[in-house]
Image (tube, rainbow, N blue to C red; front, side, top):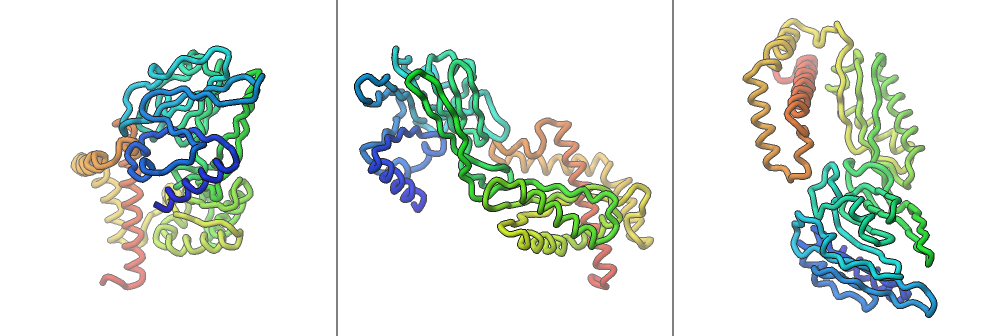
Amino acid sequence: MKTARFLATELKRLDEAGIRVFIIRGNHDALSKITAELILPNGVKLFRGRAEAVEIVRAPGERPVVVHGMSFQKPLAPESLLPSYRPPVEGAINIGLMHTSLDGAAGHDVYAPCRLADLDAAGFRYWALGHVHQRVVHEGAATVVMAGIPQGRDINEAGAKSVSLVTVRDDGAITVEERMTGIAEFRRVTLDATGITEWTELVAALGRRLGEERALTQTPHLVARVAITGATPLAWRIRRDSDLLKAEADQAATALGRADVEKLELSIGPPAGTAPIAGDALGELARLVAEDVLPSEGFRSGVSGVAAQLRGLLPAELRDLLGADEAASEALLARLAAEGSEEVLARIEADAGSGEGG
C-alpha cells in the first residue's frame, strides 16, 4: 500500500501542474488488486484491455498528437498486441505505448512479442515500451525506446539506471535524453589474485579495485559484488577466512564512502603443481575427491538430478541460471562441485589446524 499511496500522490502532483499522464498496465499490474483500485486524477488516462487512441488537445495551429495504448487484461500475453492497435491518425503525430518483450530478452519471459521491424512499419512516430529492464533505443522509421528501469533492485540489474526524456517536435523530429535516476548502482567487481602471495597485499589490492569501481559509479552509492579469481598460494586461506576478507572489504568500502560490498564470490585455486592441503590424511582426501568422486558417473548423475529438481522450482525467467543448454549446465555444475569441494576441504583444514571437531 505504501508504494500505491506514493504513486497516487505523485500522479496528483502532475495533474495539479497540468501535465497529462498516460498509463498502460503490464503483466505485474494485471495481477495487482491495489493498482486496480487506485483512484486516478482527471489528468491521468489509464488504458484498458482494448486498444484506444486519445487525442491531446493542443492550441490552434499546432499539429495534433494522438496517444495509442492498451493494457494487459490478464498476466499472460503470448501473442502480439500490435494487430489490435488502431491505425495511425493521418496528419497527426502518433505515439504508441506498449508493454512487450519485443522478440525476447535474457532473463525475461515472452510477453506480447513483436519485432522492431513491425513497430517501424506501423506508421507511428514514437513507441514508448516497457517490460525489459534494460534500456534500448532504436532509431528507424519510428523511434522506439524501451525505458528500462529507474533503479536496479539487485546485482542482476547492474549498472546505472535511468528514465528517458523524449521530445517530439511538430515536424516529427525526436530527441531522446537519458536522465540518470538511480541512487545506488550495483556493480560486479573482479579482483584477479594471480601472483598475490601475502594477505596484506590481497587486502590492499581489493581496496584499490573498489576505489576504481567507485570512481566509475554514476550514482551516489555503489553496491559491489566482489569476485576473487585466479591462482594464488592464498587460495585455501581465502576460502577458510572468507568472513575476514569480507570484513576487510566492508572496511575498505566504508573508507571510500557511500559504498557497500554486498557479497564475496570465490573462484580461486592454488597455482599448478601446488599441494592443496598439508597433512597426509587431508591430502589423500583431496586427491580422492578430485580424481575419483567429482569425475564419477554416479556423482555427476546425482548432481544433475538435484539441479533438475531446482530448475523445476524456479520461475521460467530464472531457469537459465542453471545453464541455457545441457552443455552449459554440465559445465556449471562441474565448476560448482569443484569449488564446493575446495571450500569444504579448506574448512576441514582450518578445523584441524585449530584443534576443533576432534
